[in-house]
Image 1: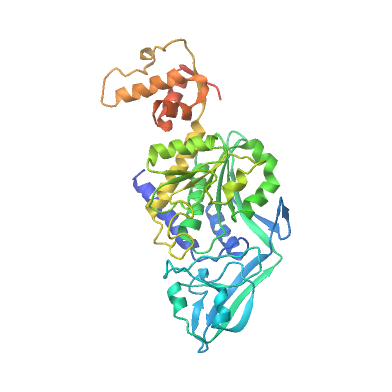
Image 2: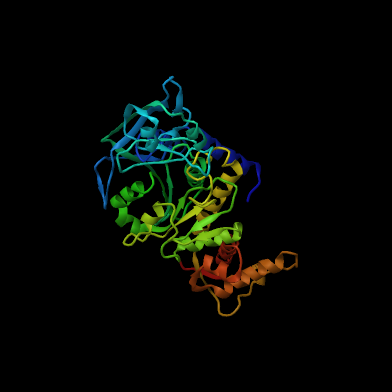
Length: 434
């Protein structure tokens, strides 16, 4: 990965955005989502914020009531808060209905959630579509609760409102689109939640600064599952017609291994590009089948009848690291370098897509490269490899294979192949087909 001062500064910038957004109490609806989207829109003003009313039908789903919360706590008979939302917004079960009552510990206990296997971590628990209320706390704290009376208070509202999501469209030369989708619905979880928006926003900034773009790029900042379903229900026909490749971004900010979850088909352009990039730049990465349970939005994009070419890019696999959905997924778990690595993998995928044309050689037999200044006159340490790649491209450029396929066939980096192919095209050695 790059190591220049500029790229290191980008890692720090993305980490700063994660840090700024970390305290916001997000859910699948509510003011925390709006606050997050307004913050991101200040960075990329092209973002359009959509409001979809509660009760809106979206395929088999219905947009739920909007949830907002002001305060929540459990206090003992002395008035001491033994669980306090102000200390961590993970302390409340997401979408808890309002409550204000005194209970004996045995009656309160069914509304408490902790992790015996991680006694010092607060779990993240939600109940979006069933009326419920509850508190989350460390297991060590839970074990310290003495028998007696406790005052449980959740100052929340759950009533008709809106589901809110953000959309950025960066036009290209073609109406064909590349989709980048990420979530804005979890509270204070750094890698699982905020690494995706931080990387996606930086990708949008980078793209809009380019002099030209082959494809139009569409970025979605959505609540998980219900957000992708709502967007698809409104735009399915257009997305099926225009989407050439798509990537969901989540858990892209830690310093562990890279991961790829394939599309349902497994052989789409997005699959081939992502697999190639990770093979070249993260050879220790892990691939997961589409059937592997995890991130929910790619299941919607790839579902039967929708069939979009979408894969999931991750570092530590969603639901596959011990810190997942706990208070341990905090600002110490992500890093500027981890975010930068996630950004570079995603950016490289977009760069390769941009240059991934199909070519056909314009001559029969080998072209005369020397008179075109394409064959090295001097032998250096790198010239044999460069020549091997160039001749491999020419050998396979029969008008049926794109550059990613050729790069895989000859064991080369697609980015290098694309640069060489463009040089051959300018020299009229190869014709560009698509």
